[in-house]
Length: 446
Image (cartoon, rainbow, N blue to C red; front, side, top):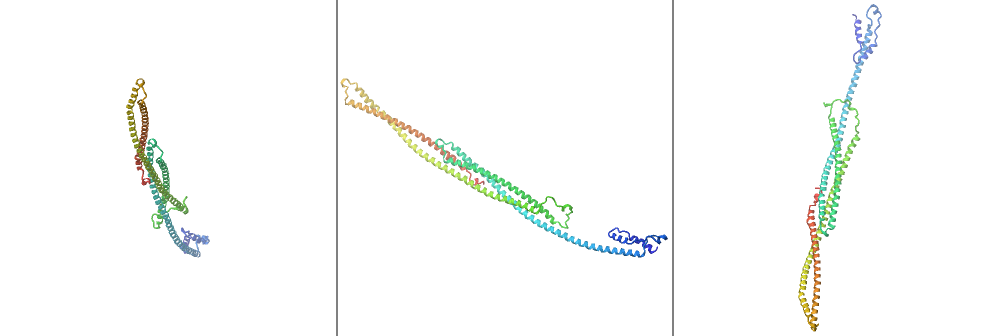
């Protein structure tokens, strides 16, 4: 076989399209060469489409040029790819470092806000605990007011059992009524204050819960960002999440994120300030109510002491007067006895004188003379009658005076008994009962 015959199949193989990159250029290079359509070779019976040596060399040169062009293009692609790889590596590392820095800055912001939230939560919890202690004190103080109220009511009920003229609306009763009104007003004030404290405790707990939820969210976000910051190219727990870069709906902005926490902190600070003001108010209230109750208690005790002193003085005067009345009664009784004896003593002389006159009235005739003895006897009888009348009158006056003295004695004894009963009520019942009055410590709620 000739060289042309051997080269023909090779050229045909060279003109076959390549199955990989760069084949297009070979096709373009091969298509530029068109084999002959026949001619003499076809006439003598040989194969058509054989190439001439010139065409063979042209084809070789085309293949070489195409290979050189492909090599140069490949070097350019390699050079550009290497630059692209280096740039992408630098940009990836820079982006990753920038992301880490931003995560660190974000962690610092979250940590600062989380620390503030935690501090406010602790302060709110402390203020709430103090309010709970004050609430307990208010409740104890309110319960403690029941004792003085019961004491005042019992004092008034006991004093209703006074007798006679002693059942009077005196200074003690006025002070007791003032004490009961004061206790009722204080009880109403303490109850309103307890309701206010309970409402503030509820507000504190709501603010604390809001802060705790915010703190919990930030703690979780801090943990997530901290874990994100720890990711590196060597981490084995990373994986592809193609949809993670999609912007989520209903996300907050940095301004709204910061404003949300600042609003929570502002509300917590406001509740803390309100709680402190309320605590000062409650402390002053407990102090003022305690002082008012103890002052009124002292006023009632002073009124009781003064009234008992007045009663004792009046009772002493009555007893002295009763002693004098009893002495007068004794003297009057002795006077009555003396008058009765004097009247009895005049009975015999009267009988003698009247008997003499009666006997002399039986003198006969002229012997019935109004002589000196007759006149003396008549005068004697008259004197005796006058004396008896005078003694009878004196006896009647003495008996009347004795009756008045007895009435006075009865009135004095009754009045003394009333005052003794009043002293028993005020001094032996009411005043000892008032020793149950709560102390300042108890009224302050401790």
